Image 1 (cartoon, rainbow, N blue to C red):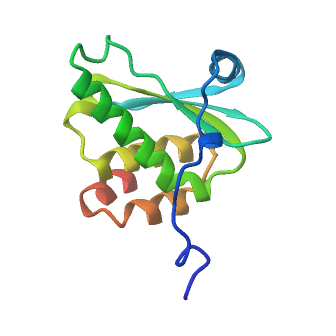
Image 2 (image 1 turned 120 degrees about the vertical axis):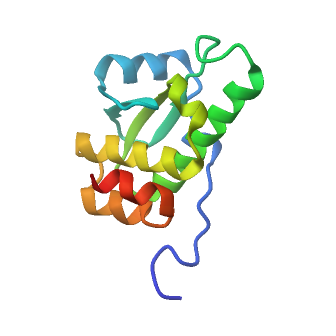
Length: 140
């Protein structure tokens, strides 16, 4: 094994998900918001990590499109989780996310988190370099 993460599986536990309204309210109240063309990320410092996704019918009336957006955002969080300090995130997709592929969502989320100082710019670039179509968007 070559690196610390090479033998470890990236997975989400039940405790990684925000489920209570009070948890979402705390992040929205105490967090810093940054927005990109495809999503909005709200980050609040906390003792334990967690993420929540808000995808209402305002995003799309079709459940299949809302579920795809949720899956893409959860996958991006799962990939970034080892690089995040203890904090809570709330992710809200925008309509442009419908045209994104998985690597583009990861790149945009990493860029928003780097802009807020949650992860380093180098970590964001290295994470997104794995997906060829997203690496160019984060370096600009």
